[in-house]
Image (tube, rainbow, N blue to C red):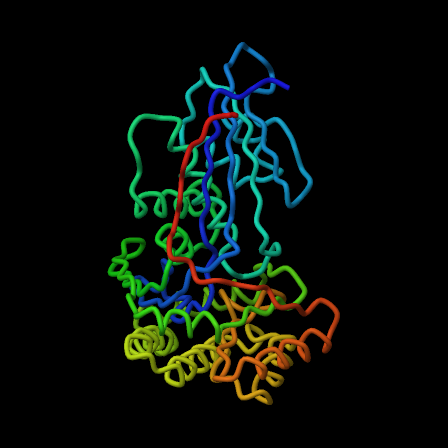
Length: 349
């Protein structure tokens, strides 16, 4: 096998507990979002080779999908297998005198509603950035990743997922004018950090989340109501409450903010809180959970963040009952991310 000239690695965390989500969008105009970056992260590895005119100059290996193929990103009409990856390679303007293979992987299930696609894009942009002079700061990486979804692929996309993946940690994001935002990382003592990590649980609901006509209807309604819609105001305030609660280590108040956010999601449209999510919430209540948040925009599939009480054995009992409730429900082990996007290079040996 031909030895690569360079090997570039990158990793970026996914996002959970996005209180204030839906207010990081163009139709909200301004917003406030609280979110938490966690592992499992998205991983990217780029092997760089000398280019000698070979046809397979750029190869994508989407490991989760078992998909390996040659891509010509300059041919935008061919962005049909993994458009987000192909558009990112095109946007970053990879030098034509290089050949490379990019491998992408994440332990998080597809469609988990945890910003996995944003994490993959952030990690990919960070790695590709090493192939050209200069370095992008985290904020610019996040904006480029979000712009690819919105401008290149014409998809509905807020800003918070990319910012969380770029910065990691616990974030309070104030979007003062879409898409521009300030990110304040919430610094807490180790005892609060460790206790939050111990109490949080991420439950996958067994099906990939996909945007639907429900989301289109919600967007249409919110666009009609404008930036000062009471429904959006209800969501924004949960981000402030979450920030304030965590700064003083008040897990009960944080849990209440999560519940209020999920209730506010349900007021956008009842189908944003799926029957599966309600079943898991009912079990969480039986085990004394302090709070729960339907991750992302909500709807069918996806995942749920649960903030558990003080006793670890009760949390484990809850997880066992949830996983026994229905085939496909499963706990995804998570760890709070101390770092956001990480990029490093090593030799090929």
